[in-house]
Amino acid sequence: LSLTRAHIPELPAMAALDLRRWLVALLVGSLAAVQVAGGAPWFWPPGGDDPGGCLSWRVMVEANNAKFWRAVPAPCVGYVWAYMSWGQYGRDVSSAADQIAAYASQAPAGDDGLDAWVLDIDDTCLSNLPYYQAKQFGAYDPAAFKAWASRGACPGIPAMVRLFWVLKGGGFRVFLLSGRDEEALGASTAANLAAAGFAGYDRLILRSAGYRGQSSVVFKSAERRRLAAEEYRIRGNVGDQWSDLQGDNAGDRVFKVPNPMYFVP
Image (cartoon, rainbow, N blue to C red; front, side, top):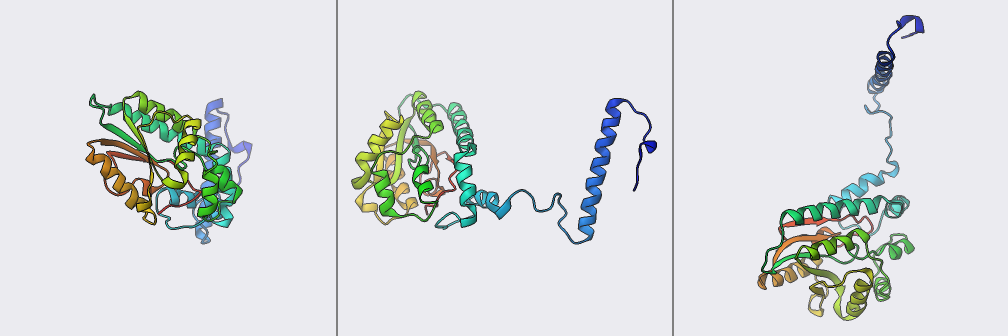
């Protein structure tokens, strides 16, 4: 196919622009057809823009299709660092918080003080990003994490601080439910939450000695059953792990915020 200007009649400016776009589309389609005929992928450009498959891996993590992984895959450490640090993570959490606030406004709290929300703490309210960056998003180390969390230096996640106050302002009871060890980290966690802007929550619920060794689903289900037995209605449940959101009395709606740094069964 050979086209010269002589083949194209004079057209009004917009029509000429549309014709050029059509010719570009025709060229792209022809290239794709040649690729298919030669056994290459049908899409164009070939290879896509996800080197290492790290974007796809993160989607699988958030969709709970990837389970029981112990560390970020080595080829994806740089990708996760960039995602968490360069703005997209913050935008994604803000979008989730906006959705949660919109839902809460459509299902307002009643006058009896029994409508409640349950929020996870680690990487839902407080960020452990500095800790995981320092260890290159490696496998969970209980002793190292305990040392980090005991410092009480986890930054608050801004969008979640704002959401906390939206829920409180809407008349909801807010319970903070975390798998952190109550005996070892109770005091530092309470101080950290206060410093980060989470003040006035209704109860801080941490893992007691009786639940050590139990899965997150088992522990959190038991604590939510206890709230239900106290006649609280759990209107919503927010966490960064699917294990925060599964099991008994999970709530009328669950909302997951992103976390490609680690997996908690």
